[in-house]
Every structure is written in C-alpha cells, then in structure tokens.
Amino acid sequence: MLYKRNPQLNQHGELIHLLSTEGLPRDILTHILDTASQFVSVSDREVKKVPLLRGKSVFNLFFENSTRTRTTFEIAAKRLSADVINLDIARSSASKGESLLDTIANLSAMAADIFVVRHGESGAPYLIAEHVAPHVHVVNAGDGRHAHPTQGLLDMYTIRHYKGDFANLRVAIVGDVLHSRVARSDIHALTTLGCAEVRVVGPKTLVPGDLSHMGVKVFHQLEAGIQDCDVVIMLRLQNERMSGALLPSSQEYFKGFGLTAAKLQCAKPDAIVMHPGPINRGVEIDSAVVDGAQSVILPQVTFGIAVRMAVMSIVAGNEA
Image (cartoon, one colour):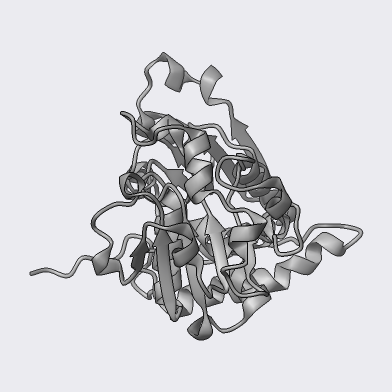
C-alpha cells in the first residue's frame, strides 16, 4: 500500500497547513505552544506588532458565524503585520452560487498568502488545501463537526500554562461531544501530548459511540465524570447541528449536566474550568462558575491570539 503523506506537512515534515490536530506529531504541537508563549507578551507592548508577516495577505473566509475565532484571527494577523481581508460571505459571489474552489481561485489571483477558513461542511479546508498553490497556506477555523484545531491548541496552551506537564493530568470534556469539533481536536491533542487520562462526559444521546479507539473513558453522569479531575472543559449545546429530539429540554440538561459550584467540588480543589464559547449560562454552566475563581475562560481567549499568531507565522515560514 502506498504511503500517503499528511497534507498538513511538507516533505520535510514541516507544517504548511493547519487542518486538524489529528495526525500531527507531538513535536509540532509543542513547537506551536512554545512559539505562542513568545507571542503572549506582544499584547503588553505599547506597539502590539511584530513584522513576521509584513507584506503577506491573510484572507478570512467565514462561511459560518463567529465572534471569538474570527476576531482573534484578525487581531493575530494584524499583530504579525499582515494585510487582512475579511470576506463578507453573505455579500460575496458565493451567495450567487459560485463554487468554493472558484471562490478560492479568484481570491488566490488577488495574491492571497493565507486562507483562514470556517465552513459548515466537514473537509472543506482539506479540499482548499489540495487546490491552492504551493506558497499558499490554509488554516482551519472550524469545519462542520470535524475539527477546530486552533481552539484545540489554545486549550492545550491554557492547560499547560496553568497545570504544566500533561503526563500528570486528568481532563474531562463535558457536554455535547457528538456535535463538537472542539472536543475532537482537544482529544487528539491531549492524547498526543501524553495526557494521563482523558474523559468524555455527557448524556448517551450526545456522546458518539466510536470513542474507544481514541483512548478516552466515557461517563454518563457528571459528578462521576469530573471526580478528581484537574481540568474540566465544558461544551456548548449545539442546537443548530441537532436533528431530532436528543434532549428533553435545556432545563433538564442543566439539571443533569450543567456545571454548578456544588458539582465542581467533585473535581480537584485547584481544578480549572474551560469553555470554548459562546457560553449558554444556565444551560451547560452556571454563572457562578463562569465568573468564579476556577474559571480560565477569558484567559483562553487571550491566549488564542498568541496561538493563532504562532500558527500563521509557522506555516508562512515553510514551503510545500
């Protein structure tokens, strides 16, 4: 059988696209986290810019709504001194029926260097990466249910910042795992980085049945699932991706799987609480926890800028 090279890597094993955390070796994930740590201090400077992408053009193509991801990618690109073009999909030719690849071909003709792509269809960033010129790089900002690699990486950065070595950690991912591209990216990254134990916690209707090969433990009761955990990652109920009655009601969901201060006591006393956002207060997490001392949800957003700076600077420095 012929060996198929990872489309994210060039022949030297260097990162040229970021499409998924799955399949990336530990040294590349660690390199991204180490590079991000060098960019965190940029936010504290009077002039918040470094010249690494000066003269480069970054096109943000968001076919789905976004606040944190789109904004932090734009900030990250501008702090790297890139020219940033935000394509308004609703007013673009895509709304007139232009195909995804035709859109990409036309934007490439405008001298694009990096495409940051969020798309409702799983695999769309892979398709784009297969058709761009060798000097053009693609960063997946979320595709369908499949992957959200920069969110996964900023989650890893946050965990490492507060907890250190992954080898000693027990991490629980709680909620709508079935529809969560963040959960998949987190699981792949955590296992690659050597996390001691990864748990998935949620109702049976929202936990996929194919997780055994990923090396995770599955729980269907919140208190048991987060018992003695160092990190609790809460997920949003993704009603826009649900079909059928997977839950009786949001109130019943909160009763069983909503994280409250009382339930959080099952985790370790110094456990941190994370959430990729947007947060539905009173559905998957109580406001007292969101705003409490163990929450690192806002630092996640801050670290996301540095992680996205790291990703774009690394891929832009490598040729296919």
